[in-house]
Amino acid sequence: MNEALLPDDAYDAKLLANVRPPDWTNPRPAPSYNLVVLGGGTAGLVTAAGAAALGAKVALVEKNLLGGDCLTVGCVPSKALLRTARFYSDLHHAPRFTGHAPVPTDVNFAAAMERMRRLRAYVSHHDSAHRFRSLGVDVFLGEAAFVDRRTVEVAGATLKFKKAVIATGSRAARPPIEGLEEVGYLTNETVFNLTARPRRLLVIGGGPLGCELAQAFARLGCDVIIANREPYFLPDEERDAADILADSLRRDGIDVRLNTEARSVTRGDGEKLVRLINDGAEATVAVDEILAGAGRVPNVEGLDLDAAGVEYDLEHGVRVNDYLRTTNRRIYAAGDVALERKFTHMADATARIVIQNALFWGRKKLGSLTIPWCTYTDPEIAHVGVYVKDARERGFPIKTFTVPMSDVDRAVLDGEEEGFVKIHVREGTDTILGATIVARHAGEMINEISLAMVAGIGLKTVSQVIHSYPTQAEAIRKAGDAYNRTRLSPFLKALSSRWLAWSR
Ligand SMILES: Cc1cc2nc3c(=O)[nH]c(=O)nc-3n(C[C@H](O)[C@H](O)[C@H](O)COP(=O)(O)OP(=O)(O)OC[C@H]3O[C@@H](n4cnc5c(N)ncnc54)[C@H](O)[C@@H]3O)c2cc1C
Image (cartoon, rainbow, N blue to C red):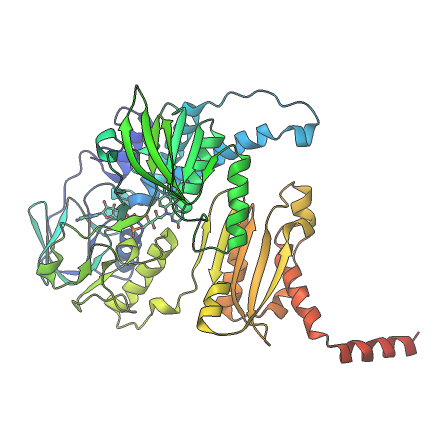
């Protein structure tokens, strides 16, 4: 049972009935499995379902809740909350549309959390134990550990395998802040349990998780401080994208503290006192709750990976090669436990690679994937391929075409003109190497660029694709138009002008 869930809630009861049925009995193990999957998050579920569909005898072992982080304490609850938060933000900005003075709106925090639990329970049937049994997968609930190079044990059962996949995911890193453990704090594993709004919230960490939840809780009426050790949010992203995000968080009333480290926490009179250091200057803030969103660590402990001959380290997780094979040739790994980029779509994509490589002599490579990602703040920040800094470091020349969203009619009409589309091509060609999009729907828009990159479609062809008017994705076509304009050399332009002058 996951202590992170509230047991007396009807929605959580429905969730549990799907992803950890209270009356579940593990099956009798088969004499041998084609594939034993350790961990029933996205990576494990996709591997198990795909392998079973191809006729493999598969065992899936989950120690907690099927669906893993994404369903219970990650993507699903966070995006449900962000949607409600956006609704309240739109209400707040109603005067821009109505011309009336703002109508005071009380945020119903408990209802926002209940909506999230209802929707989470609703989508959980995809990951249900009964569904996976009906797909032909032997589902074992219990903690898996290797016994030797070909055997896994779970809840007293012995599972012999031809191949195995480690898909045990990751968890929130415990920040080394003096006094934090004693005073108590929230992580993604507990924050979605809240039913009452913390009046004052400190978010530690300025990555995607910290920024998304800081904005959500601010819009749901909390006084939020976000402390980020780095000088920018989302340190991997382009600087101008991070700047837009910082401004947006400030506009939501968040107290943004960059270059700021939380050093120690003590308990005050019904509050938590956090000592923050900014460029050597010290300040103490008083809050009701602290949310730690500073990094993830892989779940490698307790699996007895040494018995299986699988190399790993506590920071980077299971060591895999480009085929996702571990140091034991029978064992593969997929998802957060082995990847630097910890996303659900990466867990899914690597599970598909593993099915081919483990069961069918496939030679699919992790390095061949084109991987987009998105931070679902408002505006969203999405990226695929190279960054400008990558190109500089690796010394290949690129040309960048940027279209501000304020030049895109639909964005203006929607009142969502903050942001840009920036597409990088290899200099002298129209080959797309990467893109960053900052826009309210950047996560949807980036998929067009990923498609172009995977299919080898150049920016010139993108400009020939008719985009419905008015859509925000027209920004992408406009970047293509900008590329086309660079192809018109002064000589060609002069020639064309002459021809047109002659023919009038
Ligand atoms: C707040 C938050 C928001 C996020 N939002 C997004 C988003 O919007 N988009 C996105 O792409 N990604 C998002 N992510 C990341 C995403 O949730 C993960 O990348 C994804 O869940 C990884 O899937 P996985 O299968 O590798 O691991 P997990 O989902 O962690 O699943 C691993 C499973 O293995 C089980 N397990 C562990 N040890 C054992 C054992 N010994 N025996 C049996 N079972 C075991 C665990 O209980 C768990 O169920 C978010 C993450 C967080 C925390």
